[in-house]
Amino acid sequence: MRVMVMIRADKDTEAGVMPSEEILAAMGKYNEELVNAGVLLAGEGLHPSSKGARVRFSDGKTTVIDGPFTEAKELIAGFWLWQVKSMDEAIEWLKRSPFDGGAEIEVRPVFDAEDFGPELTPELREAEERLRAQVAGQQRS
Image (tube, rainbow, N blue to C red; front, side):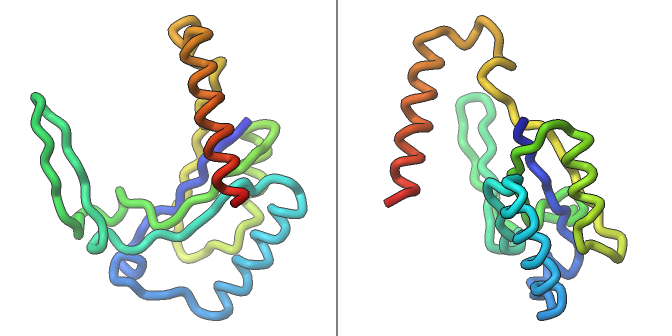
């Protein structure tokens, strides 16, 4: 199963405060453990919401809202995409992470094709698989 691990923003990440060398080294070591275990599929930190935008779709209209956004505790400062056997395994990996100081991390399963049931017709499934193969080919280039 794949899970998305989301690191919540806080006042420091929203202010653009960069992590210390010590934190970067600890995170690098942790990421290396994830890679060596075959768990890490992707992971990145995100710029503060002041550099972002939200696009709202309502009643056939599109509205762009420029950051920053007010509720830092509702924002994401970074993420990982992991391949694990279960939510329990994901949580065990997360418990080993080098976070401290009140950090809150959310872990959620990523949908797989089987989760969509019969609504994902064979034609739609084939189109999705074709797109995934195309993306994978572009990432190798």
